[in-house]
Length: 184
Length: 184
DNA sequence: GTTAATCTACCTATTAGTAGATAGAAATTT
DNA sequence: AAATTTCTATCTACTAATAGGTAGATTAAC
Image 1 (cartoon, rainbow over the protein chains, first blue to last red):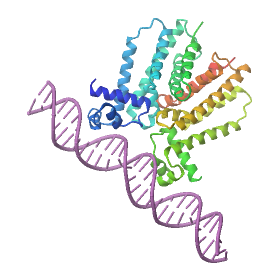
Image 2 (image 1 turned 135 degrees about the vertical axis):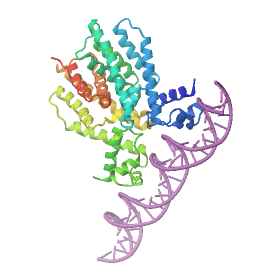
Image 3 (image 1 turned 180 degrees about the horizontal axis):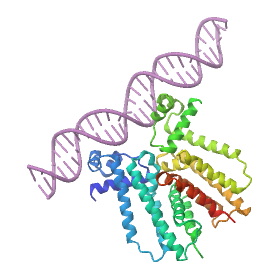
Image 4 (image 1 turned 120 degrees about the vertical axis):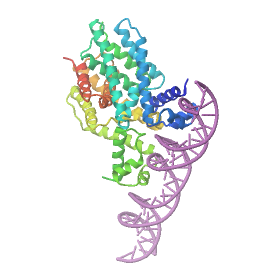
């Protein structure tokens, strides 16, 4: 792997486990065996690095989604929840949860990109919910977008809460999301 | 207000707006016009300060709840949501959301107390939901504790998300929580 | 021989924390 | 009641470590 890629990979781990204000260039340099000045060569400021991390994760997520080909909206929703399960299994949180926590210490540019990404996530989930409803798979009282918000917030917060309390709470919530909107 | 109290008050604001790793004794000292060494006099280490903040907020929350006297479980649930609305209106997050975000950088002692507090919050909400169900006010598919988790996670995460996206999303979710379990 | 990538060496500011002085209030002794 | 000691809260002054960042040298590849 190229140095630049290694730096981003390490930064992702630090940001999604400790937050943007609890890691330094020194932490990354120690981890991959280069000097901090070499990291500054690729990412002059910490903001540049956080920006690169955010765009990298967004890009990767887009590609992963393109690869999926769900036969129905029930498995699409399961697939969406699985994305969060995968992150939780690595003892990380999503980039949305990570950067949201530090939002008041980040530059407006980051906030703008994050805002856009969150809206896309809501759109994606809302699309699944809406189509699933029309296919007679789901029932829910809210609008598709608000129902998407309900589910997204369940997943974002339980990933954090279950790191403090019982891990099983994550599975409880993940399961309940599906049960609650399942039409039978 | 006494100096010690002022320090805790300022620390609460910093922790619930910027997080535990994005404020320093200097920040507090500037805010209340004393030297950092005076803060160390009351709270020798930062962990001591965070601990005091956590216990202060838990204590205050307990007292506030004691003062409430809800006639039915529907207004008790509304009261619970109102607590979160109040925090959101101050552009803060709850102490649970704040410390959960920094959990991997905090001492185990803090994590243990936070764990206990979260469990108590779940208990409190579950009690309301369970009683409300028996009183024929609420319907939901999950167990009371899991339903409490669903609602708690909705509120915790939307308080953060709505700081990045549209503020109205907070109200949308708060309203939907009530609609979804309302029996009519 | 220019460019890319890395290094050494440095800088300024901040961080968390310690040590010890001091001023005033409160308690104790004479 | 006066003198003395102790306690409380604050300050000045310091430290070692870290943070984020810059400047310029060196090396290796193209």
